[in-house]
Image (cartoon, rainbow over all chains, first blue to last red; front, side, top):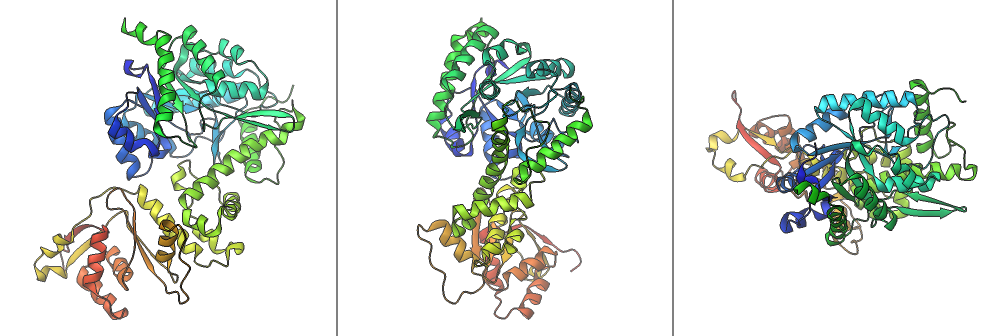
Length: 284
Length: 265
């Protein structure tokens, strides 16, 4: 499903950069937006996104569907997502392996799920419903987590593999999330990536994280507020060398820098994608 | 082995998780793996903080003048009380904060700033206007082109982004000085009420004062009362109402979307 033009690096589209992007038209592959920021009736968000969309391929990344909610996905939200997808015709649509809404209350974070057979059938059902309503394949992103649950029955990588096999969805591999979860739960990110079902990956995310030290423990927090860490770059190089290149996004959502700083990160990802031979292989 | 979780177990976990994220006095829900006992609370605290800090930041961005009036620290504390009592009901964050002005009316620690709720109403109206439907505003020339005998029966359709906030406080003055001035002007000794008009004719949201009686005219026009009857009604209740000034203000701000002729009048 991945268009050739998308086998490149892209950036999250931020309101701070929109005017500059439309004027300067930087040579980057594509932009990604959060679906929920374009669910209003009109105004500047749609004005700018229509113009950016006319120049670049787009990825729509949902952050509010709450695919893991036991009492059903956020009511009415799938219809709104469909409206955004139909209007902007993105090359990729993605969501998260997480929940955020319970009993009508929205918690504005991507909350963790216990990896059990029961959760797997619930999430599979919801992903299936999303793909049926949208009429296209969805990519599901591996989460960053700070705690795990009693009674879990499988590792996250097995959960994601089974979800992809049963629902036909693709996966969005967020390498920063792997690093964050690995540090927080004491596993080796290489081991995680070795057992990750790479054959289902359709997009890669890279982002920065914060290091929180207190009480003798170090926690990594998925903040998207700084440059990508050296460890994440290194794992990215490994993944694309061994498993192949995918459209790769730099996520920078808070303390958003001036455009040249974000573009420099995108260019670094682009240069690594090229080194990995992704572009050459496709062109040959 | 713990009990095999099923759909009901997950619903129960999410119910307890939701409560404990929002209410800091509730303890971390059972069912979380206790591999690192000492950091149990802290790890759950990351979720509490992600949720509350992101919502407080969204409110601060939406109500910048309220935040400037009370100070950042007070605003955050106030926002956290609001979030606990009125958590979002929609995953579209742009819809969050409609209840903030009413909440402020009953928030005793801010009672010394009685105009705060109306400032919040003005800021909420600006936010709604930013996201409202797009329509080209009508031009005053379109009204001027009508034959004089047709003026009375014309119906004025209001622009979808427009809102009027009437207040016993000078909310436009307070909002303006706290938005544009490095040092906000001190309140005048004899404060008089102001009515704010919020519009978004194109990309930018505009705020201005409405002349006396214009809010009553807008209310009548919103009920699809023809211009002549609406103006007569306002003139009867509002001394010194000037229709020409009212119309000129409304049209130049982009508050009017469409003119049409009533068929029966």
